[in-house]
Each structure stands twice: as structure tokens, then as C-alpha cells.
Length: 246
Figure 1: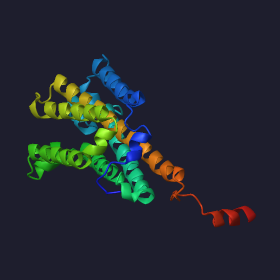
Figure 2 (figure 1 turned 90 degrees about the vertical axis):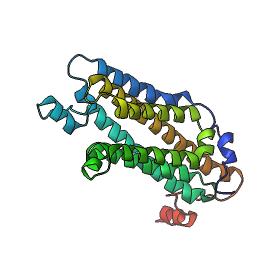
Figure 3 (figure 1 turned 135 degrees about the vertical axis):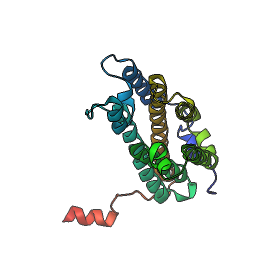
Figure 4 (figure 1 turned 90 degrees about the horizontal axis):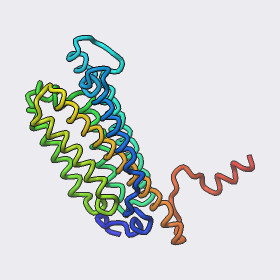
């Protein structure tokens, strides 16, 4: 099968089905962001901003809950990146010819890159201090996302494109508030980081769902066709016999 082709078995195994369960993490993330924005106990900015920036804004460094939402977002980026890259490695070993591992490789690298940006404030602080304008960094991020979509659009359309577009729309909304919003205002920070948090959840749900379905397809399709399949971590039959008799 050509590397650029869409796996026929993807549709056969329901990868085109809009599984409503994939939207639950997005709804939960949006609900949590709404609660964080509406709660009356603390300044909501301190929950959404990076912990170090929250300490500066509050003038009272530091509290363990500073940057609560920001930290959860970083954890989602890193978890998505790690799972996507691991799934890409397995798919490349099991079914290299299908090329289904490529989108997960790109998505994993992008996820980890964005996680690093959030942790070290690359586009907000680090890059401008090195002489790189913030807008240039943001345009670079947009270019990465566009390149990913151009290279993977067939598989994006084959697996829940609505969820993918929801993730992209929420992250684009966050980017718009970052660029055009009033710096430091509560509304800008809440809308920017709230949309970003829900967008990360949608991105994570999409790619974890894609990885699960792609692995299931790759593992089961050869077995149905009566062909041998490479199953990672499964011992060879001879090794199993030795183990049982020892």
C-alpha cells in the first residue's frame, strides 16, 4: 500500500464514527475552566497564568495553587506527546506500510513542543529576550500546525474531523486573544487560557482516540487475513515453551 494512502481498514473498524465519548474530556475541561473563572475565592488570573507570573501578579509569592490550570494544560500536552510518539513507534513496527504512524509522530512532536513552550514561556519571554519577536514565534507555531494538516488531512477527515476542528478552533481562539486581547485584563486571560485549556483537551482526546483505533486496526486486520503479525512484547512460541518447561 502506498505510504500516502488512507488505510481501508480504518473505515471498516469504525474510525469514521463520531464517538461521543471523545467529547467528554473537552466538556470536562470547559466546565473546569468555567468553574475556575467564576469562583469567588481568588483572582481567577492566578489560576490560569503560569505559576511564576501568577506570583509576580499577586505580589505574594508563592502558593501551591498558583497556575493550577496552566499546570494541568502542560500535563495534557506532555501526556499526549508521550502516548502519540509511543503509538507511532508501535505502528511503524507493526504496519509500516500503511503510514498511519506519521500523523502520530507529528502530533507527538508538536504536543511536546507546545508543552515546552508553556513550561518555559518560550514565545512570551524567552524568545523576545533573545531578539525573536513574539509574533514571529506564533507564526512559526501556526506554520507547524498547517504543515501537519497538509501532510495528514486524509486521515484527519477519516477520523472524527469535527473533534479535530474543535481543537483547532479553540486553540486559534486562544491565539487571537493572546495577540489582540488587552494585556493583563482578567477577561483576556480567562478567555485566552480557558479556550486554550479546552483546546488542549480536544487535541489530546482526538489523538489518543486516533492512536487507539489505529493500533487496534493494525493489530487485528492481519490476523483476520490469515497473515502473521508482529505483536510487540509477545514472546515467540519457542521461548514460551522453554519458559513453561523451566
